[in-house]
Amino acid sequence: MNPTLARLARTPGLDLRVIFFSESEADRRWAVKRDLGFNYSIPRGWKFSLGGSDYATYHVNPSVPLDLWRDPPDVVVSAGWDSFAAESAYFVCRMRRIPFVIWSGSTINEPSVQRTLTLPLVKTIVRGSAAGIAYGTRAKEYLVRLGARPERVFVAMNTVDIDYFRTRSDLSPDERAERKAAIGLAGKRIVMFNGRLVPRKGTDVLLRAFAALKPHMPDAGLLLIGYGPEETRLKELTMALNVEDVRFTGHVPLQDLPGYYACADVFVLPSWGEPWGLVINEAMAAGLPVIATDQVGASVDLIRDGVNGYVTPARDPVALAHALRQVLDDPARAAQMGQQSAQVIAPVNFDAAAQGILAAIRCAVG
Image 1 (cartoon, one colour):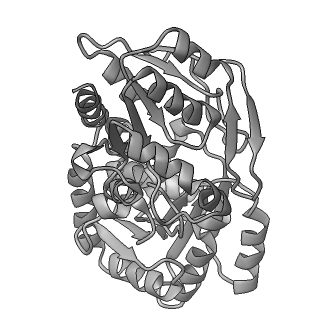
Image 2 (cartoon, helix red, strand yellow):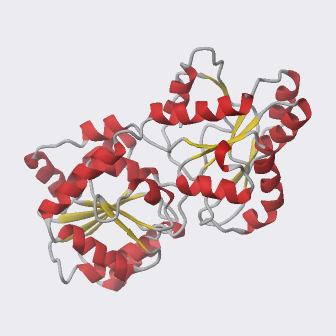
């Protein structure tokens, strides 16, 4: 998001001020940068965990509505609706007649008690917004379902630094072989996952699919990158399935990720609840075929079934194992699919996302 905002800040005639609720979240290991290329602040606030292993956090920053009231901007863009600042900012905007734009990646595939309880308020905010910004097709559909007018919802596709992952993962065959050996999967056809180890990521389904694949493809390996409360359970499941060539790396810093993508042969995101899935962008930029479930937001916009990957039903290890075989059985075709991934993702960049946001702002201010 930050590079997109930096591009937006360079728009002539636009004075961008960004408010962050906090520097990071308790369940993330992000490297915090101070120089972001735009004007921002982090007002004093508090965080409240809403529970669960993949918990949400409710942020309370009391000064935000007061500042908006005292120094009203021409338009407010809110990234989401599940915080005190977003909720109060909406009502301040209504009272001060400030156009309010809702920016959301949420989809219908994320049911929860919190969402059910807050649905009336969310519908009020969405229906009262002057415009909407959606991560992609699924998010736009959900905003419309909540009451937004389709012609006033603009797509700013969620993205990453495409050039960074493309160039840093471009290794020679010898370098790639060295990388595979370094992670203990020398000579293997590597299936890769990258994400938090939490239930909704469906990593247990991937393990079962890999166990079904392994007898037909003894030279396959599984690389699991990430951390989280499910790690111990997943390692126990690996032992129970008696499957070999599975590697858990734990947390991998951003600067080291391209090297892991470079040694993979296919990337999988088996989530049964995923608003978008930026790791899909990363893998495609690295030139990999991608497999994701139909519950992954990015699957609609980025995966061409049978062209640069496959979309499988969520929680279905049999279908996932079949898709893996389709990719890995033919290395030449897998390479072609990876090239298609790189072409599809190339225009999904920060500049394009900034233009989507700018279109929504222009619509809101008339």
